[in-house]
Amino acid sequence: MRWAIIVGAALALALSHGAGGGTSGRWHARGAALQGDVSGDGSPEKVVLEQWRRSCSFRLVAGPLRARVRPSVCDGKPSEVTMPGPDPHVEALADLDGRRGMEIVLQLGHGATTEFADLWAVRRGKLRRFAGPEPHVSYGGGAGTGSVFVDCARPGFLLVGYRDYRPPGRVIRTWYSLRGLRLRQVRTRSMRWPGAKSVPFHEFGYPQPFPTCAKARAPGR
Ligand SMILES: [Ca+2]
Image (cartoon, rainbow, N blue to C red; front, side, top):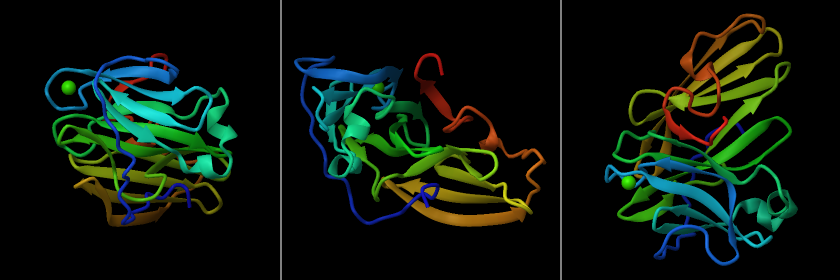
């Protein structure tokens, strides 16, 4: 299911980096640029996703760092991300794994109700995608079916809450550790929870994703 954080063995190799800053040539920004320290040096970088013309070629830009991004939808329905629209874009910068420097939440697309994203971080001076297939995280949903909520737990741990509204109603919370650019499922708790009853757990707050740990978001969100 889309809401699950999927752990996989494949490591993204879509890396490239170069010098210089800002949009240049036929590269143009896709979504808003965020300011935050993703390199961990104490100074903020400008973080933005750029697109090459109207092609399915994207690059993640963080200060002087560059990394190529090719969403898997490029192989099937590229028009979902090449036409003007909300995705893909940098959704948030958030301190997720407890190391210096914020992680990058790169929203790749959206389904009927949920939105889904990959996680990136700067390691050894390069932008690196977390391991595993797309997407690393999903969030959103609609009352009546189910909703997914993702947030920080304690440092280095991520929490995904899933709410199933179908009677009798259920809340499922799953913890993941983030180490070495890898998400590992730690434990899961499931409990009955009637659809009409509000959920007190922090990950069910808004806005999504990462309501209690995000340090930077796109303006107006
Ligand atoms: Ca920095």
